Image 1 (cartoon, rainbow, N blue to C red):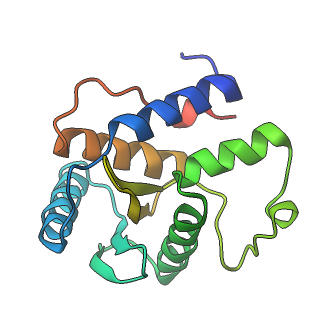
Image 2 (image 1 turned 45 degrees about the horizontal axis):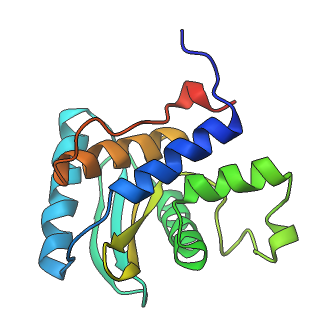
Length: 171
């Protein structure tokens, strides 16, 4: 069994993921293609999630709510999205930053009804243009949401052997 990673080790992996998983361009058609790819992967793995892809301006350019999900998953999607757009990092990265600094969302003036301190949302970052949106998954444990999303992005972007964070890595 793998040992639990330190906060620093996890943050290093998260930083690598965000550095590697960037887009050269991202259109609404790309969102449709990526969203459908994630949906197919969820079906293959019998994972029941909500998938949402949103622009920084709030426009929902893709959304699917699979059987087995509940309206609360949509609430998590909204809050995870808000976290990524505000902080411009994955929501799991934000979770780990707060853990490392022993701060709370309230310490950072983040209303828990608006923001989520949980994994499962990843920034859509252009190589030459910064964060333009977020891809969000909700339906499993938040670390599993993040890992599933990273695996799908890695395959979609044809990146080799991206380092991963698993549920067992986070205590």
